[in-house]
Length: 255
Length: 374
Image 1 (cartoon, chains in turn purple, blue):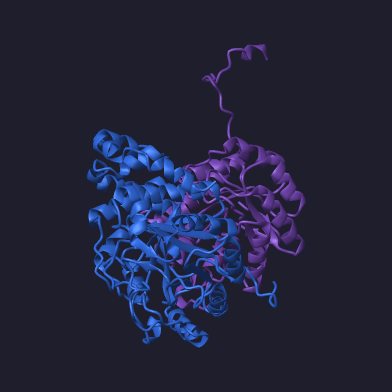
Image 2: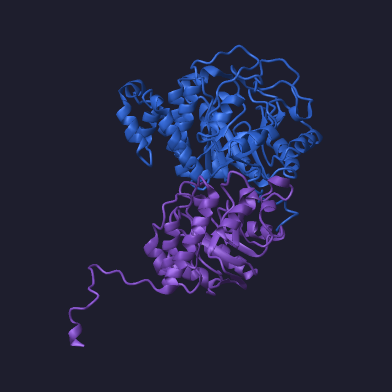
């Protein structure tokens, strides 16, 4: 089945995006890529060290991967913009995941600063994927200022709590005419499948794979869950009924 | 508002009585909670809490791995100058000791930086004694100008400054501030800090807050454990950290649990902080402040550090010398004796052997010299 995800001018067949932080060793990354089938990988510019030799994370990312540099560590739109420009200057391409976090307790994104950074960077030709707290009016503004997709959180980053923002995600999926990529909070493959069944365009995860006892096994599990969830969405889930429905209707004789 | 106001209230708590009162039931109840308050912190630091270290450790490890991953940030301290006008009874740099004092020239700073950067280290912590004549803010700034060519994150551990001075250093490229209160107990503080500007308790206590206000990305605080009852000192440190984190959510507040180490003089600490006590403190910090960094220095011996990395530590120093110029083998008098003299490579190997990734670089200095704007 041909079911591509198109972002900017890039055609993707995998709907599982992965991260690079939190692994016990960077040499796991290529193996996780293989097992997950991911084509997009996000990397924090703050961790990229061109002079770092084998410790440089970039030496562990295969060339065929689509890089999604992120602005982790930015506390304001200005810092995010500067980091994005540094990433492009460092040869990491023109995709950027905007992360503006001004709260070290819960690591929740600052939606207003995120809109500002998105506007500036989209105007400079970046393919901007902003990480945000799910809010309809913010998502619409992000679309209007040039975001290529919107990345709402399922629950606070690193918590593995699943889709706590489910009702809000559902509204974004219905109302925002852009790919909705659920980012952060997904702890189990079943939750990734649930996001995909709801119609999310993709999911991004890191902690759940990186901190699993067997990261490769977990990468594979997520690959299958994302694929199953997507298939279920395309196939059209049956409606959920409160009571059992007889397969031979009682009023069938009425014609 | 300052933490001092909170502290004067906290000083009135009947600690001994509370700590006697807490039982296993209290500890079990606290360990089931997800968010901990001040009362829970007291339970974690109590003698009853000390009998539940394994349970606390399990929870601390889970929290740390989920927030920080299987990774430990590495940094190296660089001593710039050992001139000091203070007389503190526990420190080798104290003004009463007669030894040739030293301050690195910019050439020497460059040579030390080259040596340290060659080990792969990208985060540096620069230290000085307190002497506004010998190592004023302008000297630190000059050093930072050199260091930013070699490192991607520069933190300072120097005497307390004003907010305006901190802003100056931030603009020059410094992004982190480390400042230990040494001892929160006010009478002990007065006894230990005999002479010099460091006698001013309040000025030191408020300095981390000035650092937050100036806009540093990270502020690291701590009590020098062993100077006073460690349970109370750990309690005050964690409460100080929580106050700062709540007041300045944009700043990453970290904690250090430094234990007193032998030095040039004869001072003997008042409170014996055993390994069990140190572990209890680290675990209490982690459970009370799940997102805070916890920094472990080479004050602790290798054999202990290799175990503590699993209990909530997120940053550690490596390839350490506490002498001015100690990385180019022209060093002077060490500030204190270190216990873990392993090289950066040895620490790296040890971390990998423990399924932990050493992180060398985790930031880029974003302030630009005026000539280079991007």
